[in-house]
Image 1: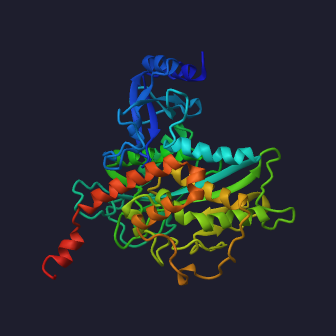
Image 2: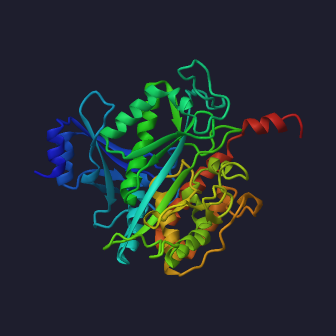
Image 3: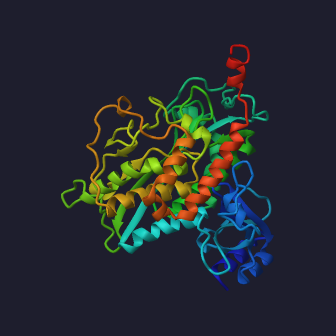
Length: 447
């Protein structure tokens, strides 16, 4: 009896959710009776259409046969036994398990988000390097919003009032929603989601959850599960939890900061610091790779039209790829630390990014810097907002840079880059057909 079957038996599981993250990070998959799941796993019969991995956030598909098969072929899913968990919010015993996707010739689906991250991790492993990452995810709690034409508003907490002023690091402001966060912590503990610190961020009813550091694939799985968990907890308390990059006008955006460090796979030594505790040459090359290549991977860090509303001057989000020591205005912050904890914090990704793709993109850029032996620009002291805005300002601009970068295509995979471009162009075309309330307000009778 294998570990998956043992888990199902020990927890008396009736049904199993087989999950894959699509390009937007949405959980796709199937729900099967436990016995049917085991039979399908043994016979490579856990199948799903290949097109699921290029589904747009609106549920549409690109009208193009260059990436997926015109026949809409199936691929088969291989459950990762390390990810099996009980789903804690269902009344009946239900398990969830995250899967990898393969063609029937045994080749991985190149534009499956989990496979993309695995591809980047393998590049590091070939050089004897081991990665550690720690994401920080920001999100807003908002009132249930049944009409998308209405602006979002903070929910009413236990005081009976909405939060209107900014309460950064306010403990009492977090306690307004104690019952909701008690559910979040209970659900996370049941799923082995290794969350650490909960803080109130700068926006009204904006929160941040930090994760303990670990291996990239494990942390991407946890961030993927955490988003689903927080949304479920919110619904139980008649509140929406949103990871939109910029959900409310006049409020800060929500980010996914990524702390990343590099260890020697054999000794466990942090390779970003020398014996004297100073920054290593490898660390500076990693930063230089982030500086050079991150603007080209912004469709993975800022994947939606809304994402670029967050990346504005003086808005608690970066506008360029400068770096600095303990400087929160730059895109790449090096926190004060001892040699064992030397790391760089990539502050560019939005909370709306697919965690697998955001990690893959950030780690790929750092990898390129190290193998290219690049040198970074000098660290910035003072505000980086006084310097030029060099990140893409729109998804249109970002896709142009993404498609023009040969090094990024080489490390992430050309077919993957093509798939992202097709999906995002399809979403942009859909967005262009929408007339906003701003246009009606200011143009209807004035032009």
